Structure formats: structure tokens, C-alpha cells
Image (cartoon, rainbow, N blue to C red):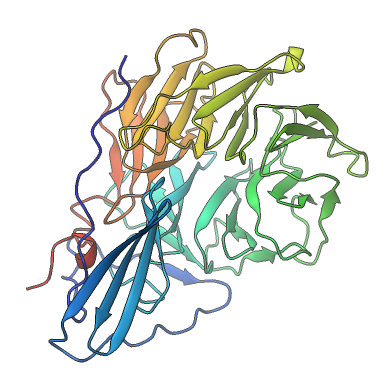
Length: 431
């Protein structure tokens, strides 16, 4: 089966002069936003010299694409994209420090609440929308609950097994614990002693432990510990972490090896297993529900699947074909197993979700489209699959009904509810 499809050929448009006012939102009151954590600095004032011409210069350096925007007053913005992911970062005051009404950032993380009714989504990207939104799957038109406090892209989310706490990690190098039933409550904020950002976050299935990885350490807390409780820093490091279904093992992966800790004995050295082919950073690590398999993803376009009953054996390799954008395979930012263990899904940077049947791994995966797919999560009953993507104008959460042969996803935010798109990214412009 050919599992590629044409990419969206729409190119970003250069910014126009001034700041057009967005049209008023239709069919939805403003969502509740809870200002949690340190307040961000106020955004700088946009240019006020109406009619100033804007010139743009396209720069290509290695694997990067940059758009330099200049006006009569000098350089006003530099936007750069990594071609491999088609996402950008802004190094100027071209975009305000907080999104304007109706703007939605790219979705870098999704997680289903244990009740199956709520999908949490972590945002970031060009519009600097660093919020967490809680969407109600039962009512796509309802305004989300918004958790505000992070100052960088939110790229990891995990619900506690009882659904009372949502853990988030961000590029701002903090881990935050939100009280879901009282979203106005200040979150517990954790950092690590080395000042590094956290790579991934996970609760143990029994609800007793919270773990996060980093480049030079693995951090473990007892769930429910106070804000000042120190982390149990485990020896070793991990770019991704996952608990076994019985909560007795914490697995971590980094380039060239897998590591396994017993959280009940945090001072013990981990069991280390060599993984020679794992030469790039690990972007996602997941256990199968029966605890027999461990799957790891990396930017080389390969999903590695270990049988934990024969861990020293070579893993099964699920290789992706070159993407439609280049002669290289796509990145794989995220993996998830269905609760019944029969499906393994990968979010792929070539705008596709790939779903493998674990009983027939040699067969081609089922393909579902999602532009800039970046994250995936199953509902606890397996009836729904949530995916988050980057997008060119705004990010989307798609919730797919798995019972349908050719499913039509529910989209959050609803296009009719959030009609406004960033004008300089190709959206509708104000008159």
C-alpha cells in the first residue's frame, strides 16, 4: 500500500503592514482562562506607522528556511523554519507575547482523561500560544477550559489514574501539576536542579509515582508530594520514560540503550540493555497494555518494538517509506497502544497517522490524515483516538471514532467556532 499523500502546497504569506484587527468570534463566548503561575511580560506595542512598506528576503541555510521581514524603520522580524518539521520560531516582536482572541497554536501533546470525556491538548508554536486546553468530546462546540501559566511550548501531558491531576512539561523547563476539578487553583511547579528541560512525563498506573526524563537525569516523585518535595534523581538519563502496566518498572530510552529502574528502590542502578541501532534521540516510549512489548520511536523513521520476554533479541523494525516532502523517512514524534493492545499508532511528520495491527505487523498500516501530526492518545475504552497537529494557520485536535471503517474526526477547535486565522500565515485578512 502507498502510505504517502500529497502535502499541502500552501506557502506562508509575508506579513502586511500594521496589525489587522481580527473579526469578532462567532457562536462562542470567551473561554474561561485561568491565569496560573507567573504572569508573562506585557506584549510590546505593534508598529504604528501606517502604510510602511514591508520587504521580505528568503534565506536558506542548510536544513533551515528563514523569512526576513524589513520595513522603513529597520528589521521587524525573523521567522525560521526547520524544513524537516515545517514549524517556526519567532525572534522578534512581530508576534505578540500572547495570542490574540481566536488564535490557536500548534498542538504538541494530547492526553485523554480517565473518564474518556475530556481531551487535554498542549499548545505552542508561531502564535506563542503556550496554553493547555481541556476539550469536552461530548460537546465539540463548547468552549474549552484553558490552563495558563507555561511560557514555552507545552510538549508533554499525563493524567493521574484518578483523573484529579494533570501533569505538563514545557520548553520553559518546568513541570506543572494542575488540579483538574479546580482549574483556578495555583499549580504545583517543579524544576530540576540542573536547570534542564524535562523530556516526557508519566504517572505510574497505580497512581503512586510521577516520573520525568531529562538529558542528564531521570526524576521521580511520589504522587501527591508537596511542592517542596525533592525529586528522587535516578542514576542514568532518558529522553523518554514509561511505566510498565504493573507499575513495578520505569523504562527509559536514550541513544544506544534502554534502561529499567525499580521505582521502589530508586538508589539501585538501572538494568541497561544495549540498543545499537538507536542512534538518534528517542521521541516516544510506550509499553503495550499486557506489558510484553516496548515500542520506541525516533526521527529516523523507524519504530522499534522489543519483545520483553526476549529482550536481548533484535527488535522488530517498522520502517517508514520516504515522505512526500523529501527522500528521507518522516519523523515519528509520538506512539500509542490501544487499550486492547491490538493497535499501535504513530504520529508522523508527513501529515499521516499510521495504525499497525499487532497481529499482522508485516501488513501495511492503515493511514489516516492529519497535517503535521505530532501527538496521539487513545481513550481508556479504546473507542476514540485523539491526535494533535501543527498546521500552517492553527493547530487542531482530531478525535477519531475507531468503530468507523472510514472515520470522520471531530475537530477541536470547531472551524465554525474559531473562524479566525492568523492573516500573515495565509488566513483571511481583515478588510
